Amino acid sequence: MTTQLLRVRRGAVGAIALALAAGLAACSSAESSPNTSASAETLTIYSGRNENLVGPILEGLEDAVGTPVEVRYAGSSELAAQLLEEGAATDADIFFSQDAGALGALANAGRFATLPDDVLDLVPERFRDTDGRWVATSARARVLAYAPALAPEVEQMTGIDQILDEKYRGLIGYAPTNASFQTFVTALRVDRGEEGAREWLERFAALDPQAFDNNPAVLDAVDGGQVAIGLINHYYWYEQVAEKGADAVSARIRFLTSDDPGALVNVAGVGVLDGSDSPAALAAVKYLLSAEVQQYFADETAEYPVVPGVTTTVHDLAPLGEGLVIDLNDLDSLEETLALLDEVGLT
Picture 1 (cartoon, rainbow, N blue to C red):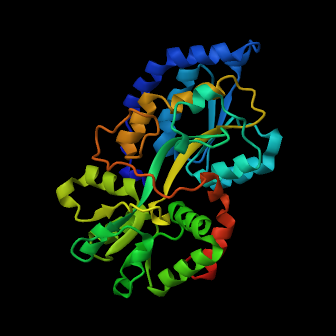
Picture 2: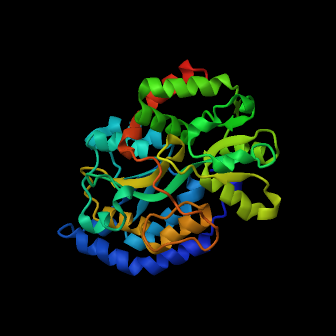
Picture 3: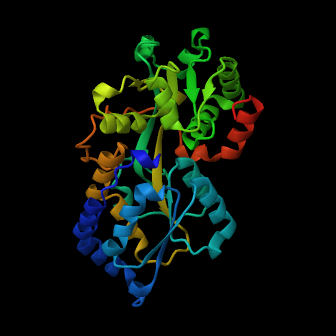
């Protein structure tokens, strides 16, 4: 997510921390027995989420759980690889990932502890690992951005195959190096198999789609009429509308309604590293799932909250559909996805 689109309310996050501090610190204290020196220990978080986005929240975490917090920021895939290399010797207590694939890589390698029911029950089953190894903290949907003047028919589309039409030659925008596009391709592979994914990608590449550096650039190209369709995540459009005003944004978005890779609902999420002895780790997970922090995500970034009862007070978010039904842990095969994209000429 680009820095210019983030409207971080540090004061609001500070209020969140103060509101939660008493309850969560008590929770952390109760869980610390018999380690009486726990308050002096450091909770170490590896965060694949951008510091501009979650920095204020994690700054508030220290007050909320009553334990010093150290955060290391990098890409989710990079940190997942580092954690796999470090193994049991890691200093990390928590992995906060931008993407379910990175969570899946660690879960499938047995690097997460099983979370207790009082944490897992905070979110619906669709937003947590089936074996209780991680929970989502927010959700996002793949959508088609489109220019009504160029492709009004997109409003009726239900599946990603419908954009594979000769009339869209040179008129589709995508961001090949962006993690969200690569995750979509991984979902395509999981859903249709390697050959099915290759066939779709080859047909897509044959239409000469326009490559952009990132999702906001794709959306700008759609809004400016440079392309008719763009493959993005939903929140980029909502953030642009919030920043510029609805009348200043001509692009529209289409949520694909079928059980289709183009309707993928991906998550950011968190897991506690197996072997962590920090008594504050579970309190930190609960902090990220608190109503106040969930409200921050819903209002500040237009992501979908994963805790029932929390709704945005800023954006007119469309209801989140079921989307593509897959085990999100299976989105961990990024290396294979990158190899396939290179083979079909979409890198």
